[in-house]
Length: 133
Image (cartoon, rainbow, N blue to C red; front, side, top):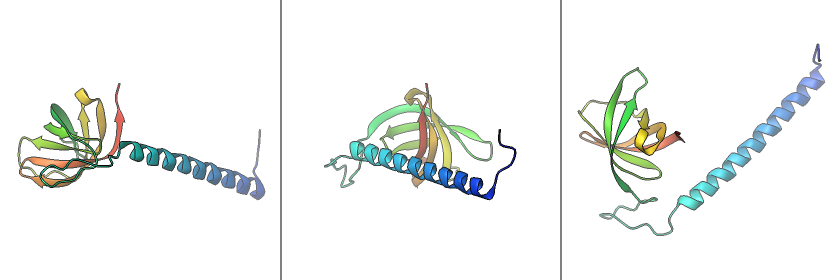
């Protein structure tokens, strides 16, 4: 049991923590590169001249959007891909650009960010997500 720390032991501890953090960052960077490399298509089919990184799947799933100020509303997922989704809300309210989205049928819970809006429809990209049980 250490009752006091010297300046030298504090410096060693800080250096070790920095080294561990750098190693963890390198591992995460390598993992992200591998995920992006495996999910990127070499030649993506065009839809109306629109090139996409990932194929889209149609969906008629219901989701719940939760906003930072304690309000939540339901939305419909029109289609989804690895990196984003097209949502349809029931009304034309002005929602914040970044919000939490939960889609139980897809086992998806994550933070999404709006990239476009057309009336009640909104395209979002996935910022962070996790797969639920």
